Length: 516
Ligand code: FAD
Ligand code: SIN
Image (cartoon, rainbow, N blue to C red; front, top):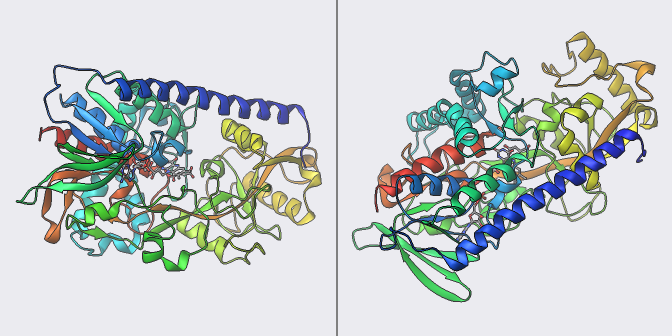
C-alpha cells in the first residue's frame, strides 16, 4: 500500500531526479560519441595500427584509456547500439581496501591483506583446485593483484577520471565496508562508464563503432592474433591490430553456454539482458577456459508486481542490505544473516518453498528497509519506488508475522547482538522495537534469486594475457573483465567485478599498446 506521506514524496522526487539525471548524463555522453564514431578525426597517429578493444563495458573502456595514454590509437567495437555493456547497470559500487574515503568514514583498519583474506575465503574450494592452466599459485597471484591494487583503482577513477566514489558500504562476505559509490549523481556503473566515455570521446585517437559484431579473431600462420573480422551495417570488415577481448560474461546466454554448463539453472530469471556469449571466438584460438560451471546466483532480483514472471529482473542492489535492509520469508520470518556471502544467502532462499508462478523459477522474499536504511540508500530507493518495485508502508499495516519479525530484529539491533542468525553489522537501521515503531514507514519489495555473474571464463595471467594449452600465452590477444575466469572461484564478492575490470582492463590496454 502506498501512503502519500511527505517522505514518500521526497523519495518519489529523488527517484525521478535520479532517473532523469542518469538519462541526461548518458544521453550527453552517447551523443558525444556518436559524433566521434561517424565523423572520425584524423590524427598524427593516423597510419598506425590501433589497439582493438572488443566490448565497451568497463574492462574495454579501461583498456582503451590506458592504451591511449601509452600513445596508441584505439578502435573499440561493440555489437550493442549503445556502449556500456552490463557495466553501466552496476548499482552497489567498486571495492577498494585502505582508501582515503574509508578513512573519511572512520573505517581505518582495512587493508589489502584483509581484502585478500575475504576474497580467498569467498573463492572457496576452487581456490586450491587445478582447472586447465590455473592452479592454486596462479589463482593466488590474480587475487593478490586484485586486492593489492584496489585502492589505486579507486584513486584512478576519482582523481584521474573524475568519478564521485565518496560513499562506502559493506556488502555480503566482506569483513568491513569497502564498496565505493557516489554520494550524489547517477549509480556507480553509469557514473564510471559515463565519465570514461567522456574522456575517451575527447581523444582524437579514439574511435568507437557501435552495432559492430566481432565474428572472428584473425590469426597469422605462426598462431599470433593479428586483428578481428566484424560486421556492421550488413558489411564485413577486417581490422588489423593487437586485440583486447572484453566481451563480458555469459549469464545472459540462457540457451547457450548457461544451458551447456549449468543445465540445472534452467528457468531462473536473470539480471543480465539476453545475449549470446562470445567465448567461442577465444575457444577457436585454442584458449583454455576454467570454472565454467561456477555461476553466481544473486539473492535479490526484484519481482515486479506489474510483470511477476518476467525472466529479466531489475537488481535490488546488495547495498540495500548493507545499509540495513533485512530479508523475510513468505510467512514473514527472517531466515538468514543478510550479510552472508551471496551463495549462502541465495541457497538459504532456495531452501524455502517456491512461489506458485508458472514458467519461471522464483521465490517470494520480502526485502524490508527501515527508515534509517531507506535514508542511507536514498537515491537507490527513490528509483525503485519510482519504478514501482518497492512500496512504502507504515509498520502497523504490515502482516502480524512481519511486525513480530521486525520487532525481534529491532530488539537485536538495539542489543548489538543478533542471536538468531549472527548478523554483526546492522547498517543504518534505527527503528525501535514495539509500539514505538507502529506509525513509522518502512519500504518493502519482493525479491528472488537471479543468475547474475559468471565466475568462469578464459584462463589469463597477471599480464592479462590469454592462456592457451599448458598455460602458454596466445600472442596478440589480452582479456579482462567478466570474460576471464579464475579470480573469484566459487563466489565473487560484490563490488569486485568493477574492480577487476578497472585493474585488468588497464593492464591489458597497456600491454596491447606495447604491440603496435
Ligand atoms: P560488459 O560490461 O558486459 O561489456 C561487454 C560488452 O561486450 C557488451 O557491451 C557487449 O555488447 C560486448 N560484446 C560481447 N560480444 C561481442 C562481440 N562478439 N562483438 C562486439 N561486442 C561484443 N559489479 C560490481 O563490481 N559492482 C556492482 O555494483 C555491480 N552491479 C551490477 C548490477 C547489475 C544489474 C549487473 C547485471 C551486474 C553488476 N555487476 C556489478 C557486475 C558487473 O557490472 C559486470 O560483471 C561487469 O561490469 C562486466 O564488465 P565487462 O566489461 O567485462 O563486460
Ligand atoms: C549489487 O548491486 O548487488 C551488485 C553488486 C555486484 O554484483 O558486485
